[in-house]
Length: 339
Image (cartoon, rainbow, N blue to C red; front, side, top):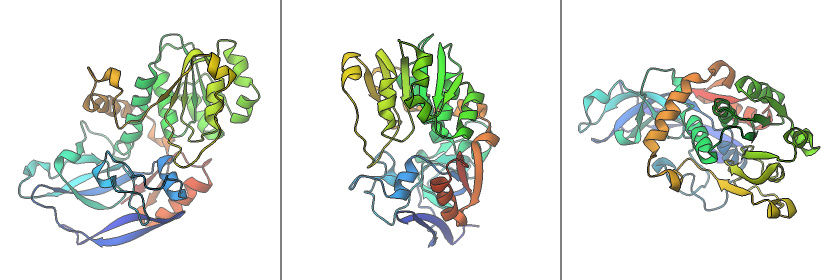
């Protein structure tokens, strides 16, 4: 049975969300109808929308059809839905019905989409795990862009869900050292479980505790994933001569002064922007999104869901979920909605 209505999440103003019941139109001839079972909050990006920190006139995501319009309230957003196809249009192969799929789609209980915009699960896994696919793909892309080498010293600033995944991926490399920085003890404990050999809070980093460990060579490679633009200065300060600083954070409208003075100027530091919507140009001869996505899928089963997914909310309690992520980050790592 196709329901007549769906539940859709809207950002209606800074720090205000609501669930609206909307008519559900059956799929067109070339579409399928997906019933969402789990969707995941992106605690970095979605907090920018929740707090009203998106630059004026910017699209939510120009690379995703459902998010390509300019950001204005009320706004549907989100991009991590896992569910099941429950109906198909007349021009769609009937075998699509019953498939478990992932979609880069806003938070809502049901939606219609062309099959070529959906990603069928390549193997059996929990819906919750599949909903973490965007974070896993982002982490894979970050590590590819950073291109770690044997024996390098690497620091990851920010141990949110993406930072933790990057730390776990890097721990598989034969590095000289892997260090994690975050203000929250819960996340630092997870970073150590995931393979960081030592962890630091930002205040300790500012006092030079990490520099004491790194020594005169400082770090070969740093990932700035904190979402805090002021952390970029510390990342640069800790990058050694000829080293790389990879910025995976999206700061939105947040700004902070960046010190490009003596240390940066004399050290030939490379600052790299990493964003998952594209493949780095020097990799495109052998890599495409499908190949990268496959590695993200195969990385997902290695993740301990019981440690990463800390809270589950019915979609009708979305306001409470966002308030938790906003006001109590020390309690939450990954928050998901159940439908």
